[in-house]
Amino acid sequence: MSIKVGDTIRLEYNGAIMELKLREEVCGDGVTVNSPIGQKLIGKKTGDKFQAYTPDGIAEVEVLEVNAGDALPQMGGLM
Image (tube, rainbow, N blue to C red):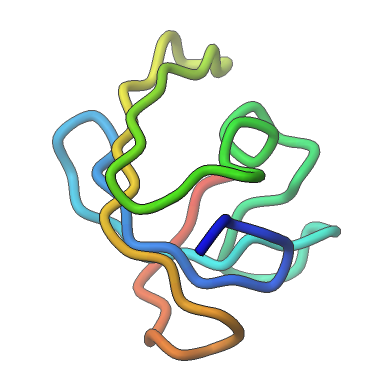
């Protein structure tokens, strides 16, 4: 399944496992589609790897799991 707004994503971000929701706007936990990570997540699938340029430097990201809606509990997010 390709990632779209509203999906909950489990990913490895610079070696840390995270779960977050892809959102259109800043709202609680998650990442927005306008952020460097959010822009790269759109259309990605489980197993995809990519780099994103963030204010903190280059982030190494691997998509581990994609679930539509709120299928996974949220454990934190990236902005």
